[in-house]
Image (tube, rainbow, N blue to C red; front, side, top):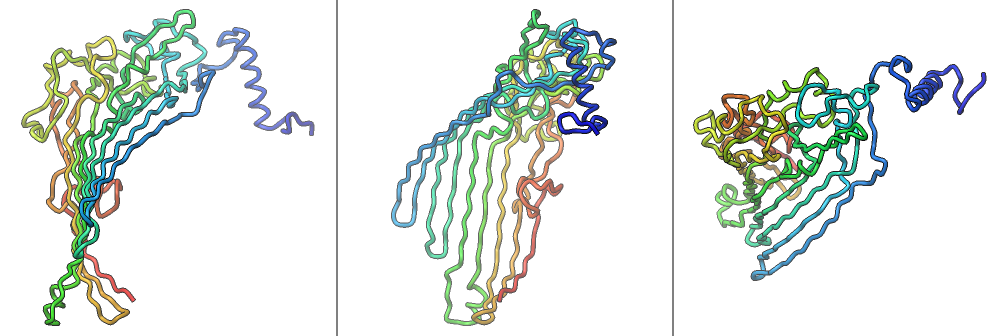
Length: 391
């Protein structure tokens, strides 16, 4: 059988290659859709000049001993990312239809539906300062506590909705170019203040009385502390989607399902526990244009509303029982979220809802008996009993 490029002429790969060659030739010769004999399709492309995402990092640290057992450490670290990858679904944005401000009224090229373009427009910045106090092992005790202030900004993390765009309508090329710099703001993972700490205490008590030593000796107490401020989210208007006609919004990468709202007065940027169950909402519909009436992409920056913080203490207590020199038995218990502190969900931030600004419900703990970020539905205290036999 005759072959071409190492493939049999009758293979599916050869058929696909021939179809592509015919389409490419017709496309560059300006053939119409009828002449091409194909319906519009989605297309993915990259910039002509494409680079690898790059990060520049730096850090500086000072340590100061305090006596023989303690040390104070101050660490500054930062980084700058550039050439970060951004996907834009707007080069053929008129395929979305509608009268949304900033979109062309005529589809630039009807032979395509969504054109997703991958480019190196994204940037990010991070600065963080950590103060740490450590105590070395002494009298059975060792521990440390850390405080971190940090600020993370970028124009690429989006949480799946609410990207802010400015547009330039390039009439000569028939393209709509989103200005990704208008998306620059607090990152989805921006945590400004965080305190973490842990300690372990092996009780050093030794008693001459065997029974007393058996009861009060060989205990191990350990604990971990987590305290941080909330993470940011977008204030959106889900009814703005009605300005897009058709169903292509959900199929185009980086066209958010909920667009940013338009404020008509000053708005708070923090939502505390007073908003739980809508008792004292941190936002109200009167602070914004009526839902669904904004003709553009909103005037609120990305990630401007910070939710409630997080607080948690995990503690373990174990008793080590020496049976013989080789055999040991350990019993104990661990308490996750020892104080049964509620981890509240983010506030409702869709201005199309009359309940906007309220906090309704809790979310799972970032750390639990099931591991870190395992998606456990448990939100309260969890106790784990443990027994171990070592030989």
